[in-house]
Length: 204
Image (cartoon, rainbow, N blue to C red; front, side, top):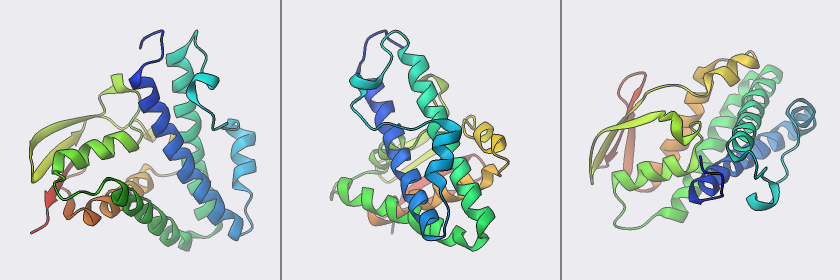
């Protein structure tokens, strides 16, 4: 990565902020059930100060600082979900509804009559953390306006979930809920072809 701030750095920082906002919503669910998840997460992983990137970043170590923030919010996401479900497994329904609603909210912001499957894939890429850009976590297998198919080349989330003693399948269940909420509001359907291959298809 460049030693100077560029569009890719703001793009990645925006995705960190988006995931932190979801973590905050999970903490709100926790508050309703007597849990202090924010305090626990901040004590374990450090507090996230939501300020403009140029005010926050270590300009002498841009790549390292961004990786640290990715790691911070990934750990908080995994830990918060595990703690919530450890307290009450039935709260998985609340989490599923939260992620679906976040996808639907985003759809209202990006929805347009001419939206295509590749455009929706780009929205997913612009909003969900999949490691650093150099990780190339996903690759497109085929695409046209009505359909796109992509493959997950590697899972950049598993280590965070294992570190908190949780199951990575939970991450993908909630990710799928988010994608479902997004694409269905835009007139598409999402499909998991196999364990690492996904598609978005124009609804008939």
